[in-house]
Amino acid sequence: MTYDPTGHLLLTPIDKEAPDRVRRLRELGLGERPDPAFDEFAHRLSEITGAPYSMVNFIDENRQFFAGLHTPGGSHAGSDLGATAAGAVGAGGVGRFMARDHGYCPHVVVRRKALVLEDVCDYPRFAGNPVVDEIGIRSYMGAPLIDRTGVALGTICVVDTDVRPWGRSGLETIKAMAAELVEQIHRREDGVF
Image: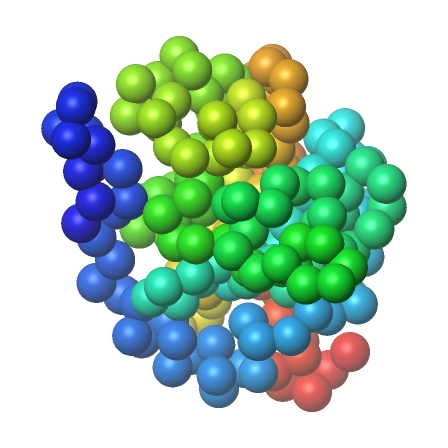
């Protein structure tokens, strides 16, 4: 449990499901390497929402892994997401990893509900997250990927460095896209492509 010592706000939620999630991700072969199909999904998510950044994010006990990633330059390196928060800097810039206490996807996974933050600074609980100062994130929209076993594997999300009026249509879109990706994961597991 992480607290902001000045405001005594819970910043990173307790995740009791993490061991089950890690086990399920290993069964599915997800969360350890980039996946071109997930990169394509992230690109399509960005196009549909108009967000400059989009991710397919799998979360374990300590970190987040962007198995699918889209950035404004169209790269999959994530080099323009911000080196400090990613936690995995290589020769090509930032990698696909981010600490579990950065960002809002861990909240979505624990809550098991979509989260829409049109301006993260409007929410004291979320405004103190390191991604605000270190990367400049101002808006976020994400939905959980809950598979057929009931495990929340991770999220899909979009972020922007500007305030975004996602609205009800944005919420419905991110939830529908999450359901679509879960079906894609199930087809993979069943050997149906």
